[in-house]
Image 1 (tube, helix red, strand yellow):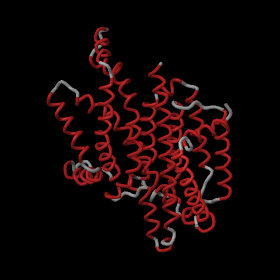
Image 2 (cartoon, helix red, strand yellow):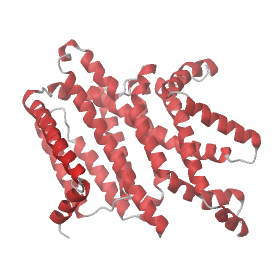
Image 3 (spheres, helix red, strand yellow):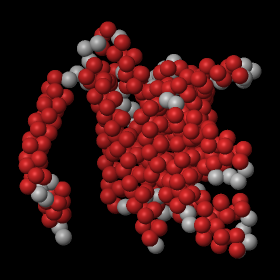
Image 4 (cartoon, rainbow, N blue to C red):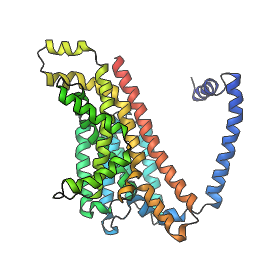
Length: 378
């Protein structure tokens, strides 16, 4: 079946299958076209995007020192490489990906020649993503050790950025670092809480259950603020930066949700799997590690990926403890009287970035779900 025939079939099945669907499509599509035309007319003819270009440093890195921005580029290359490795687990690197890589690198270099605010380092970040994607597609070892590599990259990124001081982290950089760190830390904590909730030890089971239910019944902003206020009172001999305290709040909060996702996966594992492992002489720990946990995580993947998207979307709540995330950086720019008339441009740019990141996470999640479903059927 040709691509054109597939497109016609998709339109018939999804938009014109029934008379009601056809009528609704004929009403909604012109309305969407009118809205899109109006937006494009404003974006191309009326909007002044110079405020975004002149403020891109604040939007991307907040108050990060200008003389140390090269550290940010190193961190972005590492994060891009990790993203490429994660992509290799769901999509093999083929000819189309190679063409896309060459096109994006070329566009980055062209943009660097035309705009002072966009440097050639962007091409290096793009190249890092595609290079590691290609390497991961050809190396089973890299894909198998993705979790360990992710923790290694996380620690390296934090060490690379630390010379500038956590108090200077901001903008999209802070949102990405917060999301990556909290998402990785919630998984092992969620595993421990999930097993603890199913433990035969009554006190441990009650403690884990109580923790999960309390965290799920209070708002995130309250947890972040309480950790920020309480930590200096409980442990004044260990002064922690605001970023670390905010990260602790996010990790403690979302680990409870991760635990519930993993617990649902544990419940999906047939009891016969455990009995078979015991009959083979495996210890309780080996049974959980080798037999139960891998199957449980396969079921829990959609929820865990949703956790990542939630963390990124709720990162702006760190404003309550004085941090400047991506959204707050945009609001700081609009606080300047010279930019007060450019509200739409700033918020449209923020929306597009949030939409792009969320779409990428959702797309990768769906690819991973389909791959895991195929593996389960095999």
